Image (cartoon, rainbow, N blue to C red; front, side):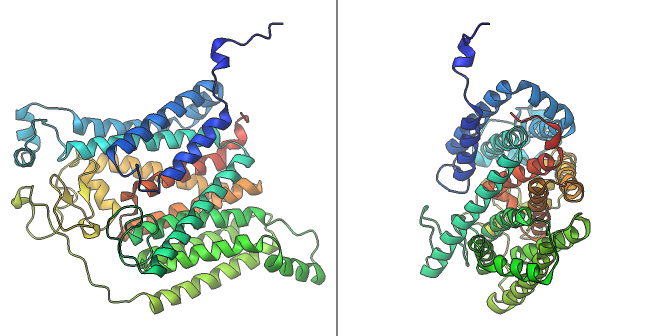
Length: 467
């Protein structure tokens, strides 16, 4: 038997190193140090593509099974990537005049000679890099998270990031700072952590709250006996055991969402957590006795948070106006608002060109941008057009459906808890997207992508071998 290693086996990167590198990238994303710049996203894209190539090459058999089983989702990612690439391709002048005459005026303002369908080549290219990065995160999560141990580690990491953001936001709010400590930029009212908007901050805490509640659910085990003495003993241990500090961390996340002063964020958290908990009360079989107490406490906390929202957050907040960017044709805007979502047809205005100008942190208009509606659904329709928006919505619904089914079908406590976390995070995202733009934050979009892949893993990972 030949025990000599080949030159490729000698330089092979261990799977653990790829997993740690991916976790460190997720740690980097919420910090506006390099991820908020073009060079930062280029670096992240190169790193994620490299890690994906290395891990996929080392586990070709498993990767082929996963890709084949989820081939329709991967085709969806390819369609979104090709759609953004089409928006960047240089086209002849007569095609631009026929398809998008507004682009010629925008071209004259920006003094650019790159004739393409997008209104801003630089931001669409940056969005293309982000799409590739999100795809790599989606693929890496499917490839790596195939065991109960790694699933639990990922949930614990997301929970830890939420605690850090809540502590940072509470410090900023308590000290009364009006500017970010990391970047010299003004922040919105309320706690915002390392984000520049309290809406983005509340959405990130919602995602981490789902992970924390998922960890609580997987720690709830079926009761062995049902005597009165055992019930009292378990109830006392629930409040005074070593896990009590972990439960206090969950309450701290809830408090962080409350002090963010984002009404839609608070409402999305209450609706998502209560709805998911009640759904689990119906489908969990066998259902631990502790889970009934858990649901009761969660409903009480949501009621208290809902009441606290009306008490602490002013109900009559001044409405923010949207100002159209002057770099576009004034005929596009009949009033100071965004154009209709179908104004740019099926091709879209270009990824990264529709920004939430009501949440802008400066009064200087940005050339080559459109004023977007106050929700992510309208933004996607404007930027990507109707076909690609439907593709993204279908992918989102497909993964969310797998998480819902996994809550009802899986018996393993870890995968059930992961599905619980994904249902809370994704349903809260869908609610918050109705009245806000949480996915305009790249860090939030990256974590949502991880939850989408984790939804599939929580349902499918029993079919794959452990690497």
